[in-house]
Image (cartoon, rainbow, N blue to C red; front, side):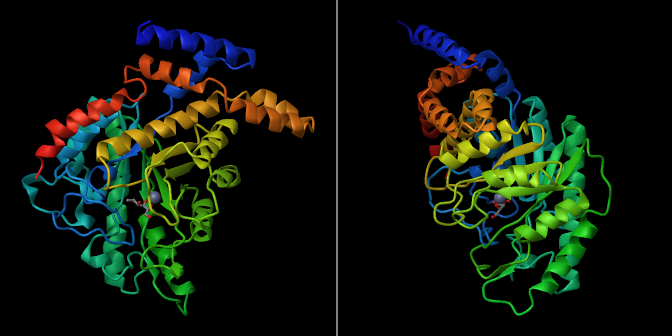
Length: 423
Ligand code: RNT
Ligand code: ZN
């Protein structure tokens, strides 16, 4: 039997089995095809950006490893993304950072002077692929952030610089959203914090609140741009205090009616963001997720099909929250092939969504609402061995991307012919 034939008959059997549980696999695949995951550009070059080839990554985040072949220019990064995107089923989005600007004539532009023109190459690329763009201010890896403070800095001049950067970024996001007719989510994360115990925890937070008010003062069309703020528990060098904590940004997002960004690596190690989705969506209209995988700390390992990844997808799907949750990825591993890292992490995110969409939720809810917790537990465990793989393979085939591990061969070829030739 040919591979395609075998896959098609496996799918036909799976379809029947799911139908018996009241799950329509065809409809599930249609729903899945409508979900866009925002691929983070920074996996392709270890969060380096193109401002300066010797730029050290600062801000308490770290990409470890020295796997050869990282992208050194926007052209290389786009080529790597082309390869990754060709191996991922569905139509997705690209998440950019301000340090990926391409100023004309290669003359560097200060971050507070960036504009959409500096991202024309990216906008054209996204248009050609029918992809939306998302955006992030870069409040790190810069001399004005050298002491670990930006929007909460005690110096007014430093704060002003970063306020202007934040304002510029929102305008860039709105221009991207308008140009592509596809709403851009512009996220704001700052590294501000202290290595050791501060005496005054309040003043930096008040300064941050006031700086944010200045950043968000201008009203932009929500059809073009949505704003998100990302909290964090601690970073390398900000172990004792982070100005933009969860409570800080939850309060800020609720008060201002903007999006809250939940990063899977930004909480206590036993705390999970899956449980925060339904809580926060009682008070904010929309969420941005930074799906990541922390191993012992906010290490940003490549996302795998873990219990927590599945729980995140289940919460989004069960709650009917697909229209209210923007799914972004945030990991950076420099120790393995970077294109493969994108493909593995993104395919896992999509697999988790498919698993959640294929769940016989109506039956589970019926158990739960009638107090039959025995039935709920039994059914949940039985679901784990349903023939999900057959549906996933069929989806990849339907979307014209490699089925199973076949994509790896493609990445290996790309490594040999393209990545290995980079100095
Ligand atoms: C840092 C935050 C932030 C960054 C990216 C590069 O801890 O997670 O989202 O990872 O902006
Ligand atoms: Zn993040």
